[in-house]
Length: 431
Image (cartoon, rainbow, N blue to C red; front, side, top):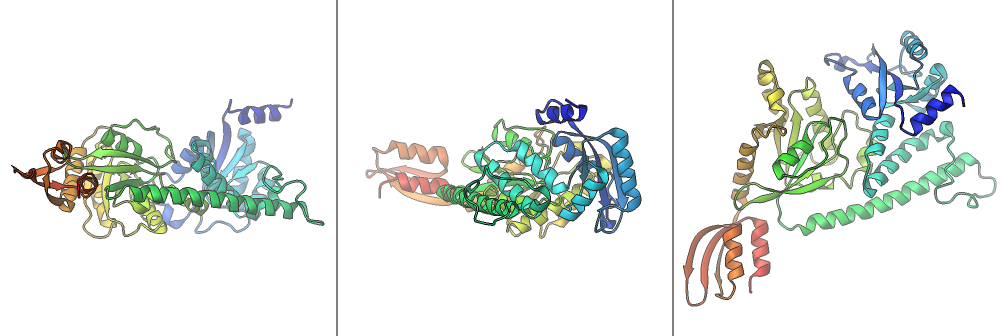
């Protein structure tokens, strides 16, 4: 076995990490970034790739044929040869022609930003739904590139024995992919219908969805607030599947708190479309906790990205509170600047300076939610038969008793309850 084949086998088996040269065209709006290559390097690391050299070029727009200019391309080729890397990664979406030209020039596998992010999603997908969503996004991305890829997909439905007379292999593969896309979309539509039914079955439960840029600390926040033990990693896209937990915010109130997949700059539209079912929790939430890593030098840009994605999925006008997370890590000389981020959201936004890791600021957050729920409370007056002590106990445990009086007919009670608990009481109480 040749050295090249051996290394390829070890990569496939996950025994060694691939090595890459990465490149980025830095437009006029990106030149204020403290480190324009940091996010691409972090993405590559999450995908199991070691970046050995990063090359950037200041251009208003990428070159049409080769993404980079001629001089920078020569730097890339020299770096690839010098380090003997496995892959060349570009921080942008390449056209099929650009990808083909770069592979010819570099003599290496070329991966663009969308492919890199989808590869991370594929690695981290655990549930059946997440795997379907990733496959759908990849197929939608690859369909226009099929002529160059020439991947035979006979493992999909309609393979051998299903071709019409005179149909070429390329046409067959396109048909197979389209059929697979339709099947995946039908299955995900059914999952989304079940998710919608489940959400509606919660009745009047108040739902808060934690949204934010990837690696903003959303899962850590969920764990601290609800006492759960969800996976927390210092990696991009540690969370792909939506998760929902109950959060007691006071003696008589609790909410459903959901975590969601993190957003990122230039999130491939194939993924946004494919993860429509997962994002159902966000669309149906009563309130959003927009969680921001306030310690990041790129916090303002990340906030803009999250707002753009929320607009794209139809949540741009949903009630939103801003959580400046990792506040303990914000240097004192940057705190005024971080607090000013609230002006990027429309209206007078509730803002909280918190640390999901240390728990600071979370008590004030819970009190604010408790006050919000108290404004929505219902007051119930009922006479409960003496033989229904279970209902009396329910009201005492789940509401605020305003008055209680014993009478011949039963216990007369006036109680303040959350809408969800009031609805449950009505289902338990006699007509």
